[in-house]
Length: 254
Image 1 (cartoon, one colour):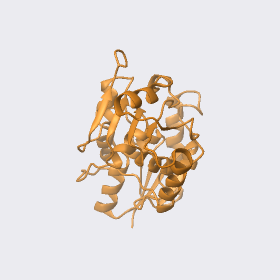
Image 2 (image 1 turned 120 degrees about the horizontal axis):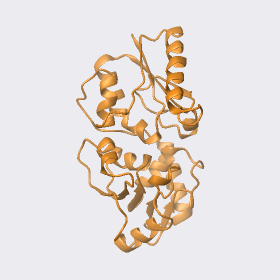
Image 3 (image 1 turned 180 degrees about the horizontal axis):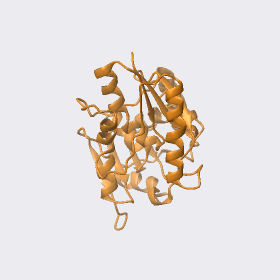
C-alpha cells in the first residue's frame, strides 16, 4: 500500500471542502492517507472520525506564525516534505487555493483524481449527538431554537452584533437561540458537538464559516448566510451538490 501525505494549512471550513477529494482518493486507490492541519484545530477533532484518514498531524499557521504568509507556506512545505521523505510517504501535496475556481475541485486536482461524488461530509459520533442533545436540553429545554454564529475571527466575515437573533425572530418567528460565543463558548465543545447542536436547530443564521459548510454536509437548509467579502468568494466555496440556501452579500436594506 502506498502512502499520501496531504499538507493542508487552511481554515476549518476548508477542511470540510477537502472531504470529497479524500473520500474519492481512498475509494479509487486504497492508499493510506495522512492529513496535516493547523495545530490550533487540534481540539476541534474535525478529522478524528473520518474513516478515510489514517493519520492526523498538526502544523504551524502560515499566516500568523511566520514573518509573512509566503515564507510561512514555503517553510511548512519544506518541513513536511522532509517529514514525508523520512517517514516513507510515496507522495505529498499541499493544495493551494489561489486559483479562481471551486476549492473542492482544486483539492481533487492536487490529489490527481476525478470526483465521482462532490458531496462534502462531516463525521460525528453517537457520543457527539448525545452531548448535543444534553446541551440543548439544558439551555433551551424542549423549545425550538435558532443557531447563530456572529464572530468568525475575521472582521470582514462577521455578522453585526445581535443581527442573527433579530433576523431569526423576524423571519422565522424564533424566540430562543444558541449562539456560538454566548450560550456556548467557541472552545467549550469540539466542533463535532457544535455541528450536532446546529443540526437540532429550527433555523440557522451564520456568516461565511465552518458552520456554513457543515450545513451542506448534513443537508441542512441555510436560512441566512452572509458573505461580506462578495459573490466571488462564495463561487469558490459554494456546494457543488444541490442545497437550499439563502446567501446574502450586502446587509443594507435587510
